[in-house]
Image (cartoon, rainbow, N blue to C red; front, side):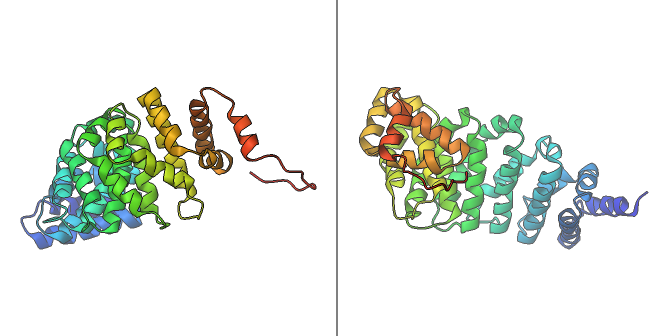
Amino acid sequence: MDTKLLTIRTLVSSLNSPSDQTRLAALRHLRNSSNQDPASRLHITGAGAVPRLAAALYSLSHPIQEHAAATLLNISISDRHALVSSPILLDALSHLLSRHSSSSSPSAVQSAAAILHSLLAVVADYRPVVSTKHDILRALVCIISSPDSPTRSVKDALKACFGVALHPPSRTAMIRLGMVPALFVLAEKGAGKKTGIFEDATAVIAQIAGCEESEEAFRKVSGVSVLAGMLGSQNGSVSLRMKENAVSALLNLVRFGGERVVEEVREKVGTLDGIVYVQGHGSAKGKSKAVALLKLLLDGGSSDKIIEDLYPVQSDSGSSCSR
């Protein structure tokens, strides 16, 4: 038998030891191996490590939690099937996340949220499974809304929320659990700050807006006004990505809310300059959503005509713009 494989099997077997020291030593080696040698990840899962790593997340020892969660995160990059097929993994992640403010290590919490993001971003069939785990969704909301949560924990929780929200039926559950106020508090705190965490918050806002329940939830937090303010910002305090997310959120609100929401967006957005800016400077996806929103707000009118009126073509001496 290959020496590497034999070593991994021995380490995985050590995870059953009643000694915390023995298990911790094995976890350290497994974490280092899964980090430094990607090929070892399949050997680790093949040796039956996943349920034992998941069980380690229940430990009261922070180092054991941290090494187990980090190893699972490394494995999620190469062998997602081994994780999504584990019947006990989600309960273990829920246990860890739900105790983010008490018995769980912040580092382990961050890895747990990152595991969810890694799986949900790629494995579409796993999204409806996770969306039924309301304890996980509730824990993510708590992490995002708690002023004591480390920035890294909030960022990883937001990425996990984005993955959950990719499954449309989960958006209603997230709204009922209080996700919308937590997200808008974060988004408003981000005014004037160029930090990825606020961009991530608006990305989740854009996803959650895509359901019928979003209209009432957004109205309670003056969501349209906040999003319009992002589009109207001219001082560079709001990144282009945040503006794109604001356009996407407003587009989803209009699509799911009907004419009443269309009128509210027209009133609050006021000038269309912000949407036109995204249409002219955003990513390919951002541009297409800006065009779609303009057409809806203009009652099917020509967005190209509005763009020409706001940004008339200037005579050029021969230079060309790159795209």
